[in-house]
Image (cartoon, helix red, strand yellow):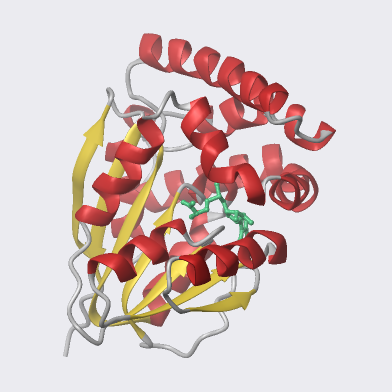
Length: 262
Ligand SMILES: C[S@@+](CC[C@H](N)C(=O)[O-])C[C@H]1O[C@@H](n2cnc3c(N)ncnc32)[C@H](O)[C@@H]1O
């Protein structure tokens, strides 16, 4: 269903889309995705660079550059993987505190090795991000990069809203569904080929090799940059900005604020 097909109220459109995503991917999210991230930690970054022909580095650099930080800010990096975002944030502003949450202990274990190598400290919490194990109003900034396609946004975004302090800002970046059908068609075919190529170069496990179709299906059922802005508003956020969407909407950079009325 496209946003232009939105005949029902936006909240019903969002519920239907999330329920469709769940019906397609619940089993993959609970079984195959954890296996993939068990397999990839040591070559995760290199694999992304190869699969994207180097664009990955530019994307992460742009995302980190877009994040406003103040000294003493407490940042939560959701689905932090190998701490790529957290390490770069600490290099940009060393006077912050970063907490990482991810359900993959393998990704986080390698993330701790990388944090140590970069002489920064990141607190690691192993947990499913559909329920964040933090008190309300804890963090000044929350980041989420390259994971939303694997998540139930009607659960994760309200959780992020809950743990943000009033006036705190959420920064989001992911591969999105291009609004133009021809761009989407070419992009998804390219993605299947790139995932297969990367899996064969790095000798990935069967779970990773079999995920090419899932990676493109997940984007086909995901949101365009414009739709994601609507979703953030529906989850309670204000001042929603699609700061940038590049390559015809294949990647989007969003930010949104938690504004609590008196
Ligand atoms: C593509 S990686 C992105 C990692 C990191 N944000 C980055 O940009 O490098 C996706 C991450 O999401 C995590 N993930 C997927 N589903 C999750 C869930 N339900 N709860 C917690 N983490 C999850 C995976 O374990 C993996 O580390």
